[in-house]
Amino acid sequence: MTARRITSGLAGAPDHVDVVVIGLGITGVGVALDAATRGLSVLAVDPHDLAFGTSRWSSKLVHGGLRYLAQGQLGIAHESAVERGILMEVTAPHLTHAMPMLLPLTPGVTGVQAGFARAGMRAGDVLRRAARTDRETLPRPRRVSATEALQLAPGLRRDGLRGGLLSWDGQLEDDARLVTTVARTAADAGADVRTRARVLSATETEVRLRDELTDATSTVTATGVVNATGVWAGDLVDEVTLRPSRGTHLVLRGSTLPGLEVAVFAPVPGEANRYVFVLPQPDRTIYVGLTDEPVDGAVPDVPQPTEPEIGFLLDVVSATFAKDLRRSDVAGAYAGLRPLLDTGGGATADLSRRHAVLTSRSGVVTIVGGKLTTYRRMAEDALDGVLARTPIDAGPCRTRSLPLSGAASRAQLSRLELPARLVRRYGADAELVLASAREITRLGDDELLRPVADHVPATLAELIFGVTHEGAADVDDLLDRRTRIGLIPADRDLARPVAERAFALVAERV
Ligand SMILES: Cc1cc2nc3c(=O)[nH]c(=O)nc-3n(C[C@H](O)[C@H](O)[C@H](O)COP(=O)(O)OP(=O)(O)OC[C@H]3O[C@@H](n4cnc5c(N)ncnc54)[C@H](O)[C@@H]3O)c2cc1C
Image (cartoon, rainbow, N blue to C red; front, side):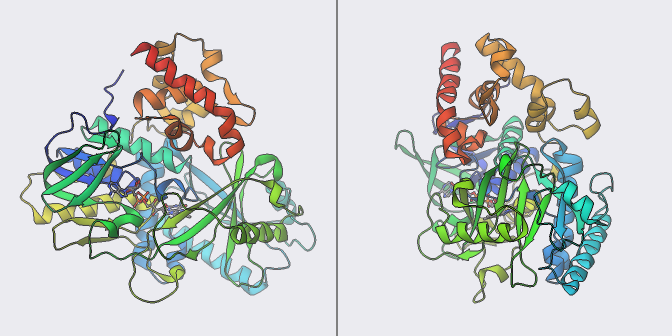
């Protein structure tokens, strides 16, 4: 078994490191990985858990940056497409796959709108080529007939359907799984990753911390400090102001829109270029999103969707699909806050989504904005920002060609003779997940690989691995972040006893 380096609390933490990373969302774990693989000593902390913040509330897409192209932001569009290609082809083929996306040409979509959409999809393909992403990875967009559109999305309204435009983008297996995998890769590279550890204050060379398990406070000295706390970034440094915007998604059971094989862009009635995404997930649920609502006031730990947002999403999807969706079809709902930098004025939808590296007067380097897709580049830029200020002797950035834990080529992954779900979520480490669960529990594969409950495909083997290798400290960590069972509250209740059992089984052996 590998060393367990993702731990909770601060017992035994170092009192000096090269770099302290504050926050264990995708940005923070990305910085921890970048720093550790440049040969630096790293302490990376979060008061809650891996992926506790915005990083688990996304649409789980690996975007090619088309929307930026539409806004004339060529640089960021290209950067997104490049990073998408790196994730899908080099660093995380196991956690990503191509997602077909259909814009149905319904009576609500005018010829002009369809023309714009088609031009956009062609431009997206040019972006893919410019980023040198293979056509095998992301096929070319094309027009499909009404018959084919209905094969791909049988629930669409048939009246007046003229066909559809089919394009491709990347989809993540799960956002929190990406964060966990990057964290594990960073820990394997030597980073000390600690959950339940809050930064109370920070300067360039000193961080005051509180162990959230014991309430004990301590000080760690460092050569550089990176603030990767997303929407909370302004709490630690004065110079950063954010204007968070809430994005809400619904979670539907797969049976609500049976046979859906592609993501569907459902046009928002009355708006020329706005769509709601209907996104089938690998676990057979469907997400519907998303909204964009400015948020004022204190930033909550866990943002909540509002009823008007839920109603809006149901109405838009019902206008495109034959079935009238009702509130009772909503099995779960979640909301996340985009960490948008306040650049003064403007609606949140128009604020820059590019990341920024900002150095405060105290010397803390803040990395904020961006998205899951571009986390690697954000981390590289943040570390370069630290190294430009300090005399630390570090190697060059290595993450562009560094596979994450479990990564293998798609061909290699397809040859693994292991349960498909484990391969999707752990790649070549699926073997390790099963072997360590066998070793810890002495249970048979029937029990370790049985779905936790009806409609809940997660297994005891995964939950045990969450405890032994991924730093899960309690049942919430397992249900809400190592797996995403908690996105549907009814499933969460069913799975709780199995998660408790996973902890008990590990405790018996330790
Ligand atoms: C609705 C929505 C949909 C999105 N969809 C996509 C998508 O499909 N694809 C994509 O690429 N991007 C998407 N994004 C963007 C992406 O999710 C975010 O840009 C990204 O997750 C931000 O990650 P982060 O690590 O910067 O912040 P977070 O994930 O919020 O992490 C910050 C962490 O800092 C911790 N923290 C706070 N205070 C302290 C402290 N004092 N001490 C220590 N730690 C602290 C928090 O607990 C938290 O875990 C979406 C965003 C939203 C809101």
